[in-house]
Length: 425
Image (cartoon, rainbow, N blue to C red; front, top):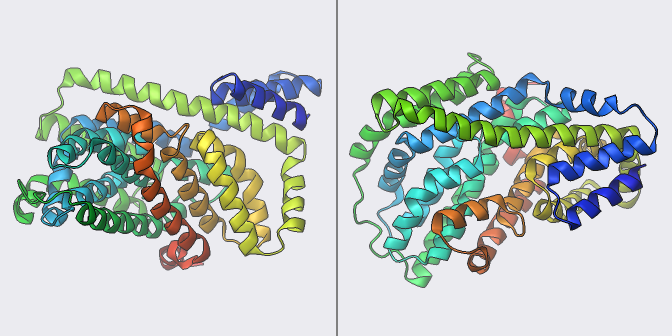
């Protein structure tokens, strides 16, 4: 059965059938081969999305879209520029820092790309940065949207691997800050080597003025994350709070979102959410079928026999996830692979929260690697350039993130220090 499912999925990929449909069709073929009742498909697909934590996904997507149109992202850019924009290469560093702040609310890398990229890519080009470099920088920085909490992939991993979403959220700060600082350092050094951004200080506001303009926007992640860790509301409830806060700021305080725009924003968010939920439903069915076929146990036994130590196991998993992330969408990869790999990781003595950070950071690289990097398509759309022009500029950024990934993999306290501090075992 599992071989038939695998062949079906590969054939579907080869003829350019969408990932969600390919996974679902392979699962249906597997049910047919075993002569099982086809009602299993409907039951498991419904069960996969009938989970309360998943309600956070559409709300975080809606919050991100409201931030994009409500003037919040613009004020965050000005505040970040006031902090790091006064040096050569400072505007490039501003791009990374703004994405870090925006990520602390939106939970989505694509929303971050559009919201911040629409402002900073033209600004970078105006200050002398090549457009393909600006797009590559923005695409890479936006992946922080799924590493710094709240994060939609973290929610999916928590649900799939039965790990505390709150613990995952707080564990994401260490890896997120590490990657953000590394990208800012690289951006500044590279700008100085190439002679970019010599007038980045032009138009920079003072920190006081920028903070005064953006303080309500900056209060947003404080309310959301403070509420979660203060026990005021759950991560799912926090997503609803984020929507209302973004709506109030955009419509009634900043007045950059008209009430007539809200329906269009909601429609856009519903379509994005439906795509993710359809992937989750099909991936859940696929996960059920391969578990029923004993694939996770077989893979676990194979890895345990082949990779004798945790270090080799983590190296092998990273190599596999890097390749998988290039071809399969992050959400589908997490839902399908987490139930298979997490038990094996635990057997090797790897903390499931730490392993979640490894999976999420690694698969986030898939968002900026061809051929299916969603951030690349979004950044190219904003920059109005073709995908082939951005590839050569991506390589240094990918290497920086890979270096950070190795540090995250083999230095667990980077992910677990804050978790252990807050969630005392």
